[in-house]
Length: 115
Length: 114
Image 1 (cartoon, rainbow over the protein chains, first blue to last red):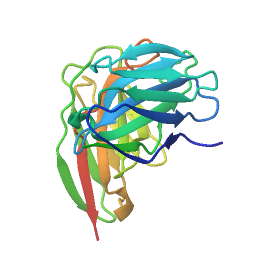
Image 2 (image 1 turned 135 degrees about the vertical axis):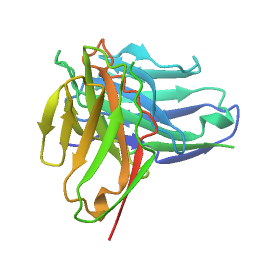
Image 3 (image 1 turned 30 degrees about the horizontal axis):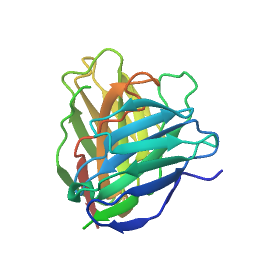
């Protein structure tokens, strides 16, 4: 069983550019969430996808968008990059089966630097 | 979502028991308490979760008093490899609740020395 993987590990972009980050969920998981973690802070929830549909969104502008594919892999897209978008972007997958809690398994993250 | 308060940092020595307390005065009836551990440049890792009283697994114990307004994560006999940031989270379980929309605070930086 493979864990959650993310690509790329590091990325450098300039202000105004667009970026796509990728996540491969743990095998069998149907839910993926994305988080942004600024230096010295805890992760902040961006949005979640369940069976290819968005199922909840945090306090992030529309230029943050996502996709979940039939194989449950996922993408995070950020348009019009700003300097404050520099952060570690984490993907977490889980299997929701209607239970009261669904343990989330995090990937190692993608370190995005915006210059 | 209930706000949590925990110490910014703690220091300990190898072999000691470490207790990290988290305050969550506004916890709701349906809220669970969950702790995550995070090493530098890695994603958080689930440690333990509980609703009330005491929960124990192979790595930690979680103590929750009757009023549930606080909780204590207990790490027995810590080692250098336990140096990490520990997050206390409170939220409702389930897909439509907050269980999958984790709200992290700034966490507690635990430093273990020889």
